[in-house]
Amino acid sequence: MSERQSGPRSGESIRALRWRIRIFTGVVVAGLLLTVGTGTIAGSGTHFRAATPVKYTAPYSGVEGAAISTLTDGCSAKLKFPIQPFFNLSTNRGTASVQVTVKSCGSANTSALAMVSAGFEGNPFSPSKSGVDHLKATANFDFKFSIVATPGGVGQFAEASYGVAVGFDYLLDVTNGTSYVDTFTSGVGGVISSGTSSSGFTNLHLTSYLNASLLKTHMYRIGVGFDIQVFAFVTPGSSSASALVNMGSAGEHSNLLDVIRSS
Image 1: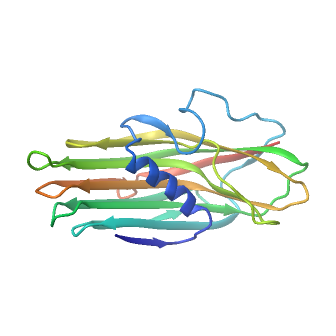
Image 2: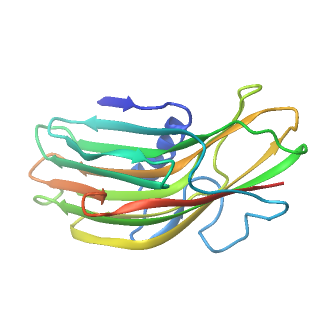
Image 3: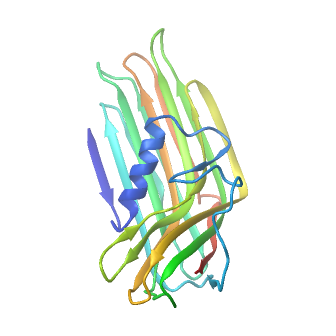
């Protein structure tokens, strides 16, 4: 098994781990909005209570960041990143493209997982009063996906999946180093064990939330952006699988519309 990680480490490893858990346990379901933290299916509850809100929109202030994390096992895993993950503070536009491919080889299972993320870390802020802060991030997505799973003979298995989400990578207490992660993150994803599923989304609207108790005497930073993951798995024999998400080669992109903070 091999693993590679690159890019800012701040909160990306936490989010990547949560994506990984959902994929390996088969939670991602085609066409459904998903949570990637604690919370409920999107649209089934209220997680944000607006009061004296502060709204951040492009051009955002802060530092752009991107990360790639991969995990492979077996002898035939291939990973491609035709478009490196990127986010533009001025235009609020994000792009990326990632693909994994595996085929049966040898006597062990083969798998490939790739996760990319991009977004920004905002400038430090201090709340006007101590108490619970409610943060909300909203983004639109245009992207295409293709997942293919071809099991071989009797008893063989293949699986391919993808997921796309927007969310808070972290809320960092700069004063004492405490980090908070998403209360609720929404996304879309799909998984198949035979056949092909190829489609896309245009103007897909996703919203994520984070609630945290903050102190007015402390300074905080917010990390927010988009995540893409693709996964492919096969057992020994003659199976193959692949997964692709394209958010950039033909004008596809994400737009982080706004980040709202209220207390």
